Length: 342
Image (tube, rainbow, N blue to C red; front, side, top):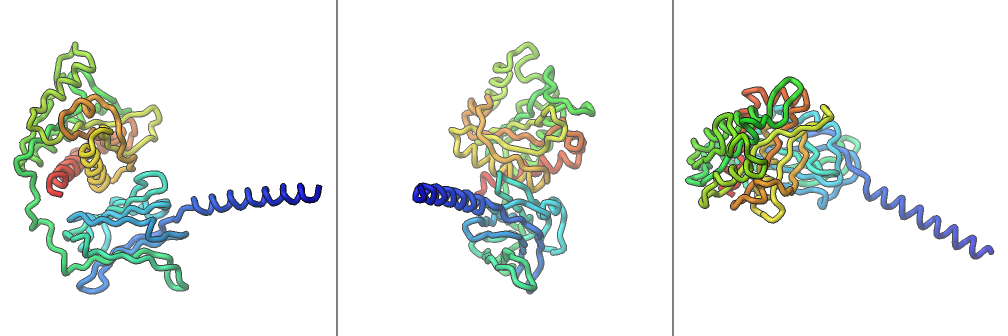
């Protein structure tokens, strides 16, 4: 009896320790502060303070011309999420954007006024001391950087199809203030067209006015196929612009989609997602695969983007704002340029 009781207690203790270990492994580090400053005239430093435990395996850094992208796993954005979209003191940093890219993954995008080479960027993780919190130090050598505006960054003679979602007899989603999805998508599409055309691209619009691409009497499949048919065989990429909607008016954020059978479509969706986060500053709902008609039937790499929720009063106001539409267009154009230049 005693042996059985001891065995049961041992099993219970082992079970409790297993649960405790699993909970310990899943605990998140909380990001508490982020700052940018010059160590000297040669080094720009980005400092990320945190509470909890992080190691090099939880940290992924990429430098992409004007952007420093930091992915931090096993983390919660914490207080630094309030910094998103705000400018910082350093003249070499234009803006810092912070968002929860996926569950337990925080993405920090530092928009620089310099263009940097990833191989020159270094980082270290320093433990907490009496004087300093636990922190990540990212050092960017300014001596290897150059003005981004000096680079030849265009899209040459690439063929890009821009699809302004809905239109004509189909309003799409409608916000509480009456803003229609079809009006927002067309406005952003036209602004994007100009930016890309100015960069040398050949842009084909599925619609340039408030019309049905097929006909008012067409079925959904016929309407969507008519949009796909706008893309000639020489098309390099297809981008469909939409606004999201949900019954809960508090639901918010942007997201991008690709067809699961298209690795280049995924790459396009990822770049669009990064640029929309940087320029738009909304909650990032991530990059996802989907079987949307225009993605599945497109003959070239394609992505569908949801700019924001028109059913959210705050985002409805932004989507109707001309300045914000310009930012969204800049985000799309920037992603297209990176797609073709990387």
